[in-house]
Length: 232
Image (cartoon, helix red, strand yellow):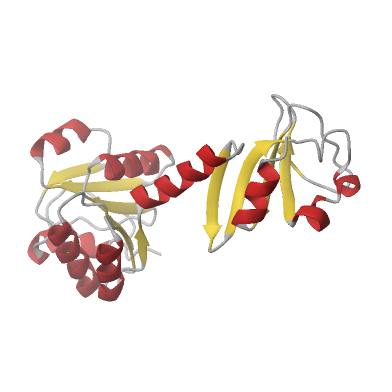
């Protein structure tokens, strides 16, 4: 839960709302994240050092301000310490990213997410006490590599060596029920859900039947899922 119920634009009286997030750094990653949060009903306080960026986003976020996030007094004045969830998405300035994250940790922010530019940057953020470190470029690169390599329509890495793959139903499924295909026993993947053409997603059951053009979601190890996705 957030520490208070709402935040306003009155200096000195801003307090974080239960469903609100502060996003520090409004480059491409930070902007997309902030706008997606707004789209889904989360109030967003956006902070960036560049006036032109803030002007562009004015009216698109709940509140957006020009500020130096490496200064503790600025973060306190903006009541960032009253947000339970803060995202540090500062772009190429690693020093500013580290200083900002360090300030947030010392202010006692409950949950901090931070964008890392490389492994060394990520290690420092983790050592500072950042709760969630993300590597957008690295993760996107891995995802695209898997998509380029095989017949997958989409690829999502859930955890270490467990992925969910979106793919077209292949010859091992078409014309059979899930029970008849014995996919799990033979290929070590689990069919989680499926969709007939232009229909809604349905949970996969033993009696589910598949036809050409169906789209399925499978889960399993990276190697097993990719090998199954290669089957025509």
